[in-house]
Amino acid sequence: MDEATRYRCRMVYCVRSFVLGGFLLWFTAGTAYAQTPPMQVLSAQPAAIQHAPSRWLVRESPEIELENFRRGVFQGGELLGGFLADGSGAPVGPGTTGGLDETFWEVRLSTGIPLGSLDNLLGVRPFFRADHLSGLSGIDAPETLYSTGVTLFHRKKWNERISTMVIATPSVRSDFTTSDNAFRLFGLGLVNWQCRDDLSLSLGAVYFDRSDLGVLPAVGLSWTPTPEWKIDLMMPRPQINRRLWVDPGQAEGWVFVGGSIGGNTWAVTREGGVRDGQSDELTVNGLRVFGGYETLVTGNRGWGVEVGYVFNRSIEYERQAIEFDLHDAVFVEASWKF
Image 1: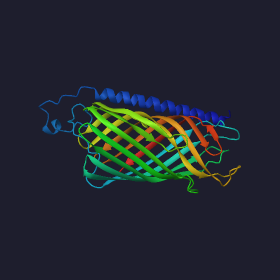
Image 2 (image 1 turned 180 degrees about the vertical axis):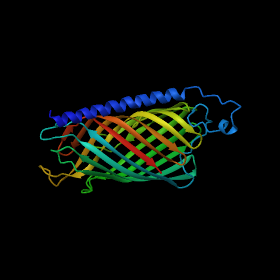
Image 3 (image 1 turned 45 degrees about the vertical axis):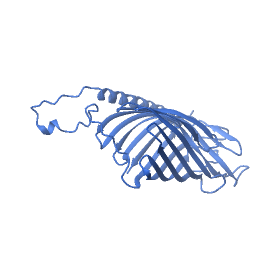
Image 4 (image 1 turned 30 degrees about the horizontal axis):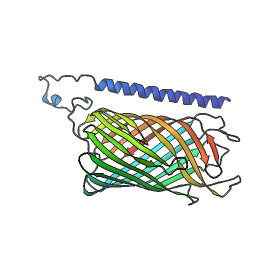
């Protein structure tokens, strides 16, 4: 292993330790602070101090539900971006050098249409995303992969206990050089049972429409034991959330940890080799664990950042049956809702 490779490995190990250790310290400190008994305000103090908003005293704040929607059809936009770093220079297969780094950016626009009432909603969200691959030589992976389409969301509340949710995302995923198998359809269907005021159970299925993933069952729960905790154990992104602060009815700050299935499948045109100029399907895969922080602002606004670790990574071509196991990696992502 040369000096450059050893340096990259050390940097990845340092970033990994810093991310995990820092997030654990942040999460523990925030929880301990939120549980600290609030300071009593003496009656002799000025009225302006007595009635000042207690932004950081979670237990003192009155519970006013945050409106995460706008009173109109347009529900706002969102910008996302991130970088994934593969810190190893070791080959992943014969004739390859370097690791696969990934960078992406995405823009979304959201609309919401009540179909008679707020208990029967249709959401429409067009999006455009570009993923940039770099660092890995010896395999003819395109430098840029695109995904564009629209996410359709429908939620209907049938009675006080039963509701349904359907998400469908027809899209084009390709390098924009071929249309062969470029159309893809992600789908999620759930039946939700509100068995208690703080607990709902869900049952359904999720369809990824990827070369490596088809249909998987979706079974989970959403539990809110207190206003400060929300536990969503649902595929494809289970997550545990802890509220750190609240400005009643205006904004909230949350930390979270969770996991997800990363990657996707794109239609591409091969360059070089026996399939030069022919269409194929490229799949990049990985399992993610992550933690982060987000600020939610009334009217479906806010911002967030998350960091994490990716393992069980791979890259493969479908029609030539080429597959390489990639090195583990770390990533950072950010989002802004406006």
